[in-house]
Amino acid sequence: MLANASTLLGLLGTVSGLIYSFSAVGQADPAQRSAFLASGIAEALNCTAFGLIVAVPTLFIHSFFSSQVTSVTDDVEATSVKLIHAMSGLDQPANVIPMSAGQAAPANGGHVAP
Image (cartoon, rainbow, N blue to C red; front, side, top):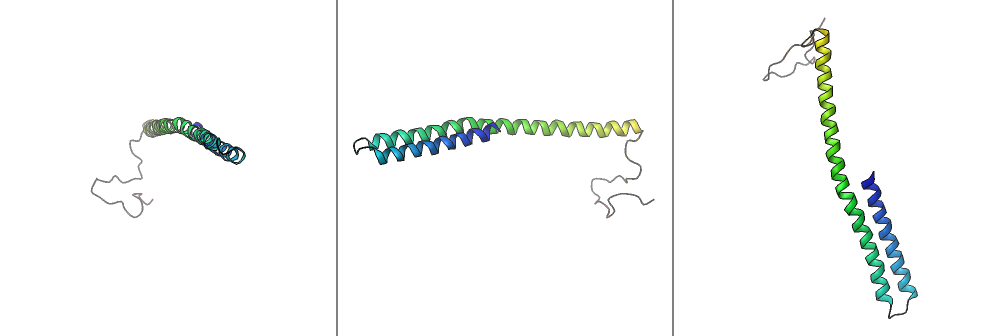
């Protein structure tokens, strides 16, 4: 969220800087046009840079924490399945045929017909 907002705020600053520079160029005398244009472009580029300075590290941090949450969620899910099997007294469900590593899965998904 912060990364997206900072990118958009940088873009907003870029647009406002360019609007400022081109409106100043239209109204200024020829001697000052280049100074106004340079000032507006500098504002636009600074806003873009500061937006990206905030957005890029924030995206990396978000990606890191998202992967950590996914890892913990997967571990909790696997542990809960083991716990349910242990509480029910089953190490493996009775209606599933165990497969060795080299076997292909049967067409019926490994389930035994009742």
